[in-house]
Length: 113
Length: 114
Image (cartoon, rainbow over all chains, first blue to last red):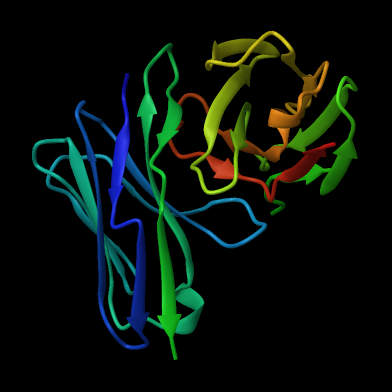
């Protein structure tokens, strides 16, 4: 079945550094979504990508839809302490007329002030 | 504009009991999906409701059932609870059709089965 592989699993960085993480799949996805989850909370949608090659920004966050449609990347520039959390990539699995989401296992980000 | 709300926040049950979790979707949304998130894992899709019917179902046993009401709110029921059902249960809403792939999550219900 469809699986999303995220890397790295965890990152420890210094405040102010840039961060890069990625998500790959053996199957093609038509949409890539990036979520952030804080402890004890639900995932919050950061960026949605709908077109191969698309590059979309949301403040200090930039995400790209890979040209092969089998991968996506998320970059965070000039990290700050509130960037701490778990970042998930997700994509819709079209088992029916409406896609449910498949999630990766997440990248846990820790920021040292 | 209220986002997705869930109740209760936390719940403790014992094995064999039954539980009902509730979700109100974001204003303007008509589709509700339920996910189970075990510790250290990404959310796993349970099922999705649209027009008061189950539209899709993930790989979960029949002990997991749901309902959607005319106001689009939804319930998740789990019967004969097992220890392994302990998890964060997330509700997500979206608008169908349209950008239905963008699902917005509630804060979740933390279920502990003893």
